[in-house]
Image 1 (cartoon, rainbow, N blue to C red):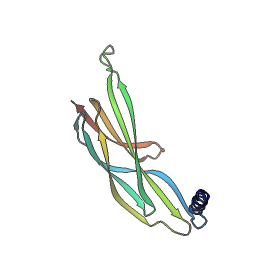
Image 2 (cartoon, rainbow, N blue to C red):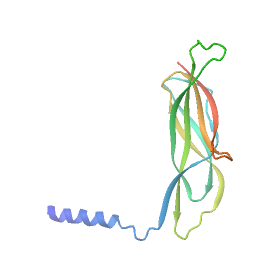
Image 3 (cartoon, rainbow, N blue to C red):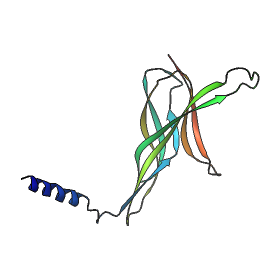
Image 4 (cartoon, helix red, strand yellow):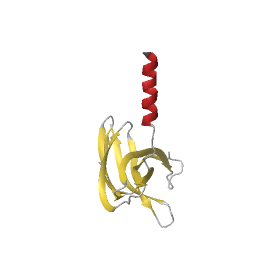
Length: 153
């Protein structure tokens, strides 16, 4: 009975891995943010829904995930160099789409604005800048939409 079960599982595994009739290529790409709904003030230990509007260029694009990175920026006071630098926490968001291209199929232009919600949990007080990737400029440098946010207790 165990051998029969093992043979069945092995056959099922091999059959499910057969991709000979699937000529689909997948890749992932960041899509430009058009706008975001971000509150100007937040309170710690709360979760806020941030809605991101992004450009979905063709029918081959579908939402995959939102990449979120954090960093810290320190700014010196030029008028008083002995003063402690101002610390700003930067949260950078990039909407990632899955692009599915099947052999022989063509993607149709959409150029529509799609939305995705992101839940953001506030853990620390301070000054923040929420940055959303909005594309590339003529020199290939990233462009960001920036929203200042103050998080308090």
